[in-house]
Length: 421
Image (spheres, rainbow, N blue to C red):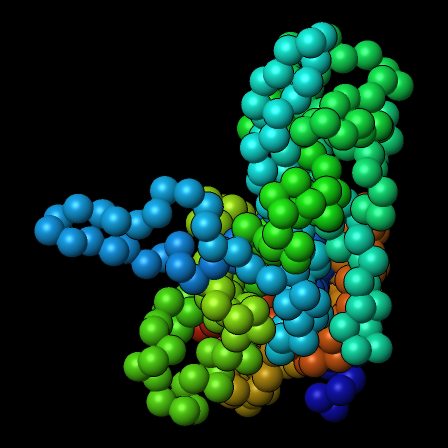
């Protein structure tokens, strides 16, 4: 008898049930898409934010030491400390090496530029442009074309194995440089492959392969600093703790989490006599952007589910009002409040299950479309998401139906059978 009551309700009120089902489907579809994107968004947004450049810088440990005697800072003003270029491939041996998008060493050198019979001192910066390196059996490419993607070259990028250089655009204007010419630095001629535009101090400098700067300085293998671009997770209470004060269990959890602090710590372990720290403006902005995007997705999800619950509530209230005579007859024949409410909750459960399944499929397709259009990659749908979405669908449907069902069980059978409420 009970299944027949539920079946007849769907058969006789197809339009009402269809409207409620559509409301549930739409709400669940939006929730599915937002949750799927939010759970898979971290690495994708981090990769998008890597277009802002490196978020870590590694310098010699000596740069962090302050030597004061009698209140006078005796720290050498010159760049006297260097890292060893041979240690840089060890970055690929850190625990989070898969999160290291790339790195680029820098070595600034002051050199004389000869032009039209005169000399002027300019800064030449040696770096990797697109350098092929290896660590063990792992071969990879790294350089400023990865860590500094906003650098624009009018011409051609130099080859790391040759002596071509880039002129900063402001420097090129001052010396009236023209295409396909060479420049003379410290008595040596160098081919200019292009003009570099960065919007930074490099526009007044010359950028060359790292080996050229090392030769000019007379220090083979010397590196002044290394910029590292790494995928990290937003900071939290654990990330900012001092690892020296942690218990072994907490330390393992901190070390095995891709915080910018833990990756910096591992870089210091990999490169001897180094100090690594985050470029705070970049790293903090990334965490802020990621948190705000996830907050916006949560807000959209809650709004969609609230709208769905309200639509279900309106549809159920109308359906129950139209069936007030049926409810009065059931109660006149001896049906208690539990039986009456069970009929309507069973109907709501069936609506939730059907709307949840259809909404999950539609939301998965929407999530894939968002991934392709925004991140140019696939959003992976975790299997555990399905039972969560079904539970959300049931909760939203019951929440929307509860008030109408509560009113139904309070109908007076006498007034209901006479046509009143």
